[in-house]
Image (cartoon, rainbow, N blue to C red; front, side, top):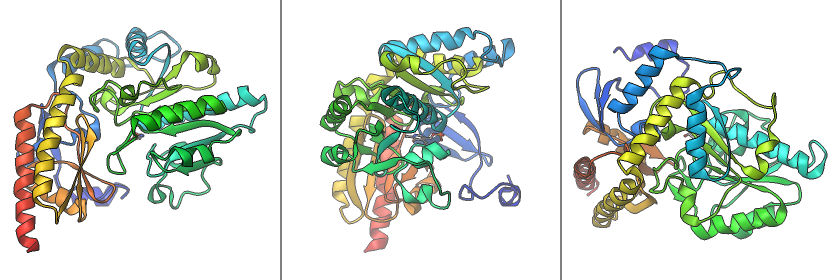
Length: 400
Ligand SMILES: Cc1ncc(COP(=O)(O)O)c(C=O)c1O
């Protein structure tokens, strides 16, 4: 494809693409010139079953041929089934479906306003939300307002009122910012965009306690780290806490757009007819796609696999990192959400990896993110590690 078509007729909010991906199968994609790539980015944690998984394709195609769209004015059976399956995993509560991660977080933020109203009896009194520095919650006004990164917010002020930011894993900092006017705390159990920063289990437990003491909701953004990616179905589960609300998207649809909010039983009645909604949310194809994702995750034990394969892969990257301390600074993450920390800009390294046939995603400036399909083979992970190793050796030679 002539890539200048992009600069001619698409707004330049994304960096100019250098390749056009034409096709995918499993953990591999091919560009429009037929070049093969190992896909360790999975569309930024989206293609959880890899590309063109036969069960996913069958579900989407069959639903498209049966009923592609249905308004939420009528019942949508796959939506009800998906809600039941997710509630069974998240705990007693209810679901609301939308189309993206940002929209899922908007749902959580609206929930926090309704909670504040119930708590104080007055609209606009208890509405503040405490988020983490370095967080990313999406590009809508609510999402940007909750995002603790200046580069995302810059140029769009005034943003929503009432958001403050505390350091991740610093309970004292959070404690000092959660006041009587705080409606909710919103954090990612593992921050993805800022370079795979893991919220410690003790920290999440401490947040739960703080929120309970001060009457604030604990809302978790699992848009990137959820649906098995971190080696548990939800990344928070390792800490043993129960949040009040969860935002989901990305891997849930395995490539078909879907977002979701889970709201715990105690707060599920805050939404009432007319208080929130979206035309496409919970549509039949999206829900069938997500049901296929859940089926395959369960049938192929992909959560357990993510845990095991991710640990092996990380060990392998740790060895490479230890051998090249001038360029690499170790790894972070859990399951198949792995960050390789670099002492130089990760953007140029990610570009170099792409030229070597390996797709990864830069994060936080100096981190290479690996977010492969959950059903990636151990052989493909080893191939990816070998490409990283060769690239680092070449970079090392050039440094000397
Ligand atoms: C943790 C988190 N929340 C929210 C979002 C926004 O999701 P979307 O791009 O689907 O709106 C992202 C996207 O990267 C994310 O990683």
